[in-house]
Image (cartoon, rainbow, N blue to C red; front, side, top):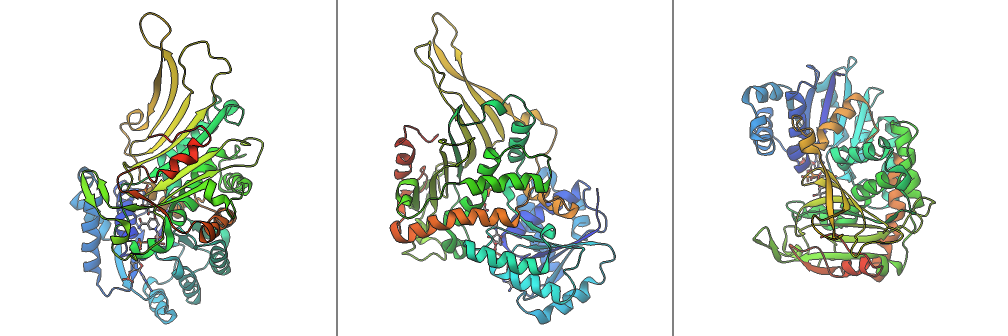
Length: 480
Ligand SMILES: NC(=O)C1=CN([C@@H]2O[C@H](COP(=O)(O)OP(=O)(O)OC[C@H]3O[C@@H](n4cnc5c(N)ncnc54)[C@H](OP(=O)(O)O)[C@@H]3O)[C@@H](O)[C@H]2O)C=CC1
Ligand SMILES: O=C1O[C@H](COP(=O)(O)O)[C@@H](O)[C@H](O)[C@H]1O
């Protein structure tokens, strides 16, 4: 399907637009997935002309795209789709000029991608409406996090909902666009093998880790008001948890998939008041070494208050109160400046009911999203030689090898194409986002009252030692 479209990127000079969106659109262009008529318009306040924007975009694109995939002639073709429009998106009066620039839609889809801070979502939507740019052919894409609490998320959702009907709102969570995340659904719902054992009777616990080696980079101003809970756990990690825990949807379409995810979020056991001291761990990185380089403490990073209490690490023991998952802890953790970059889901099965051999470990299914994409099942096998010496062996499905002739798409490529094509299966519905905040809000409130100071951890480690106690208290261990 190839659809004629105007793609407006508000925040077009920002980090997200230049590092992710422009390179993703370049790839889509390069692979011939964009209709010849697709125009891309970057918008921000900065007073620059088209040429200056194209040079800026080219510089970033060259840095992000693999050398073998960057071609000057292809770039020229892509650049001819690009333009820049300087606008202060809070100023309604400036939108008349935008409508004039765009001209009549004439059957084109209009995608308004808000790669801006969430406080601009409401004014942009209402300003677009005021000049007729929010009609039936228009879609709006909202970046996460949607708000900073349940109340603010509701307020944003209501304001956007006044202008755009729910099916035309695309709340993006780029983790849902990652190849292995979708493979998780394929694994669960296209293989008969797993369903019978995918439940409390056979699973001991589940770990979801998203560890980054990066610090806050240039995003201190935003991050210091967000922290790891709002930046990562409220969205990416809870989405992963939903995909692991949800029931099979009746169809693979937007409503059916999202209905099942909401049920999981609604079944999360609340963590309130002093519970936060037992079931959560907050951390903040201090100075340390990452990849052999010295890195500063969080409170010395750019735009961070030096007495900041913002967490750069969070670990939570989550529980799902339903038949399938009663009694199975889901240990979630995410952090910046950790020992190594990895995103993985580990399902640890229960031990066999009666062990015949001296040594036996439990089976584990590892679904790795980053840095490599693979699914691996740890089984016990007999080591060669005399006697029944058992050793764990891995049954590996390396997705990059299995599909070695296919380029791996970046999450934003898939999601941008889905928006253009009008498929919201991999986007979050309003009730989903609000259900996630409904669970997260009491934790944030509990922290205010009972857990203000994050635990320090040296950069380049697996987080504060208190995180180990979260699992060890119940006889489990984080994977290292
Ligand atoms: N960066 C990332 O990796 C990710 C970011 N996000 C989310 O994406 C959003 C954008 O993040 P990021 O790109 O990092 O932010 P940046 O601060 O880098 O970019 C913000 C952009 O908004 C523009 N802008 C600010 N105020 C206005 C205004 N009044 N009118 C028009 N344009 C304006 C800025 O340009 P100018 O100042 O010239 O107007 C700039 O282009 C945030 O919600 C963030 O949480 C989500 C996932 C990952
Ligand atoms: O949404 C965000 O995600 C990135 C991590 O994304 P990944 O695809 O590199 O795993 C994170 O660095 C950023 O703080 C957060 O806003």
